[in-house]
Amino acid sequence: MLPPDSPAPIPAAYLRRRRRRGEAVPQRWRVYSRVELLAGGWTPKKLTVAVADGRLVRARNGEYLHPDADPDCVAACRTGGRLTCVSELARWGVFVLDATALHVCHERGDSRHRPLPREVRRHRTRHARRPREDASVDLVEAFADAVRCQRPRAAIATLDSGLHLGLIDRRDLDRIFALLPPRFVALRRLLDARAESGSESPVRLILRTIGCEFEVQVRIDSVGRVDFVVAGRLIVECDSRGFHGSWADRRRDLRRDQAAAALGYATYRPIAEDIFWHPDRVVAAIRGLLDLLLPEPR
Image 1 (cartoon, rainbow, N blue to C red):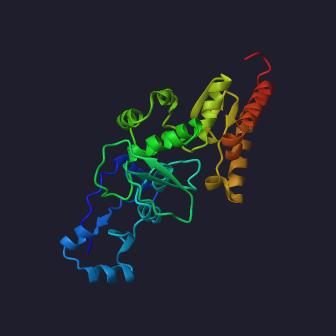
Image 2: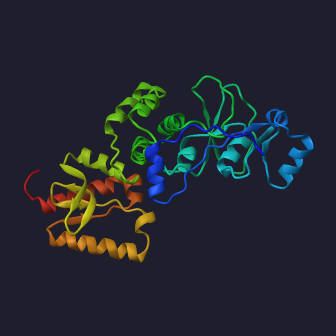
């Protein structure tokens, strides 16, 4: 058996939310050194046999992981580093704009990089050198890397998601921004933990840019809770494939829009692709609808 893990505590608010939704809680995985395992009673032959029959995963020479370890954690260890940035946050269900590449943190001075068949984005730790016992960095450092690595609106969406999920709190934000250059401090006043999806954050920023009055997460009788109500007349809903992809979802949304129309609301549903990559189209649509709904100067 492997030595017992001593993982960092997972925030209670995050655990409650995952369990309430019936979602599995990610694990933090340790990296075991050959020296540590031999001292714990393993023999070289037992290690070889355990790797062969799948009871151990050898990430690289002298480093082993539990067989259930997340594949991205194993891949990061194969490069001689630890999982970080959007790759680590995606494991925890945090919104990130693009987690295609593998984001890996290497200790300063470590040049032993094993190549992988996928793109690897390398980060350097800004903490003091420490023993590599974990297969991934702590969440505070992962969020700091993600803020640096993404465009500002995507970074805000990631931080909003972490706050909404209960993975980080205001004290964690202090630590995150302490790891970042001063130019990032301006992002903090734009955060809002009420954002329930990644696309809500940039839409909120768009509405601020337009300068119109809006409310967030508004409950309307016979309609339900909506993402935004703009100028008291326009409902803006941020759809995503995960919750609006099937015909049953589409039918439910249309009936909600119909109920809203009966109460005098217009509904606009921008798609995530336009929100993140073509925000000018979203701005033009909202302005056009407000000009129609509110002909008087705003």
